[in-house]
Amino acid sequence: MNTSTLVQKVWNFCHTLRDDGVGYGDYLEQLTYLLFLKLAHEYAQAPYHRDTQIPPGFDWASLRGKTGEPLEAHYLATLHRLGNEPGMLGAIFFKAQNKIQDPAKLSRLVQMIDAENWISLDTDTKGDLYEGLLQKNAEDTKSGAGQYFTPRALIEAMVACVRPEPMKTIADPACGTGGFFLGAYNWLTRPGAQLNKAQKEFLRDQTFHGNEIVPNTRRMCLMNLFLHSIGELDGEPLVARSDALITEPRAKVDYVLANPPFGKKSSMTITNEEGEEDRDALIYERQDFWETTSNKQLNFLQHIVSMLKLDGKAAVVLPDNVLFEGGAGEKIRRKLLENCDVHTVLRLPTGIFYAQGVKANVVFFDAKPKDGQIHTKGVWFYDLRTNKHFTLKTRTLKLDDLRDFITCYNPENRHERVATERFKFFSCIDKK
Image (cartoon, rainbow, N blue to C red; front, top):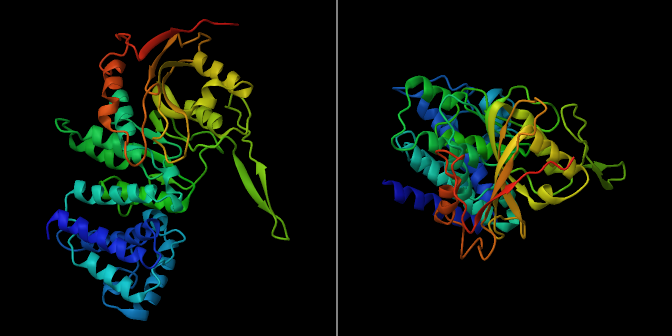
C-alpha cells in the first residue's frame, strides 16, 4: 500500500468512529497506544532485536490474536499494566483508557495497524500523518485541544529567525503537542544540513526538554516526537509531566521557544466535603522571580528568563497584557529590559489562534550578564496586525504571510536592519 492510500485509510476509519461518538482526540489517543505497541513489536524483530521493555503477555502479539470481548478485556488490562511501567512506556500509557466501546471496531483498528510495516515508512510520512490528526483535533472546537496547538507557520517563522544550532539544548516549559520541538528539529535536519553521528544522537536524545501538565497532551507530544525519530522507545521521556513554574529550572538551556497558555490567572480547583468547587488563585513563591504574581503569563516569562544560559536566546508568544499592563507587569517588563536584550517584537494579527479574539505578540530576547547595565537599548517592532485579517478556516496564516518579517528580522545579522512601513525601531530611554 502506498503512503497516500494509508493516510486516507487512517482518516476514513477516524470518520467511521466519529459516527459512534468517538472524537478526533479519543481516536488519536487509541491510535497512539496501538501504534506504539506495533512499532515496539517491529523493533523487537530482526534485524533490530531491540529490548523494548514491554512485559510478556502485554505486547502487540498478545492483542492481535484476539477479537470481540476477549480483545476488549485484554486491551484494558494491557493499558493498565503498561501505565505502571517506568520510562517512556509509563509516560505514553499513563492513566490510559479505552474509548472505543465497540469491540468489532477495536478489532478493525488493530487489524488495520497490524497490516502495515510502520518502520519501513519514512519519518516524514508517519510524522505528517500524526501531525495531521493533531491539527484536526485542534480544529474540533468541542475537544478544547486548540489551546495546545500553535499555528505551524508561526513556529516555522520563529525558528527561522532564531536559527538553533546543533549540539545545543532547546526547551519549552508548556510544550503542548510538541510543535516548537518539531519546528526546531525540521530546521536542524533541513536539506543541506549535514549532521554527523554525534550531532544526530544529541538531537535524538538530549536536545529537547519540555514540560506538559495535561497527561493526554503530553502523551500525544511524546508520540509526535517519537514518530519524528526524537526520543527512544526504551528511554526516558523528554517531556516531564509537571508544572514548570513550581521550581527553579534544574539546568539552563541554549534556547527557549514557547507559547505559554493564554488566560491571565493561575488557579487551582479545591473541592470540599460537600463536593462544592472553589477556584483559588495560585501564586508561585520563587526566590528567583522578580515579582510574585498570580498572572500566569508573567510567571512563565520570569521562568523562561531563569531557564536561559548566559548567552541563551528566547522567542516567546505573549498576549498584549504582558507588554502593556501596569503593576507587577510593568515591574517585570522593566527587569526584562534591564537583564536581557529584548530586541524584536512581532505584533500578531487576531484570528490565528484557537482561543478567540486573542491579541498576541512574539517577543525575541537574548540573555545577558547581570552586571548592572541596562541591556535593551531599543526594540524593533514589526506590525503584522494593521489591515491584516486571518481566520482559522478560510484565510489561515501561511509561512508566505511571514516571509517579509523574516527578511526584515535579518537572521544572518540582526544588527544590520532596515526600517520599513511595518518594521520600525524604538529607542529605549531609561526613565528612572
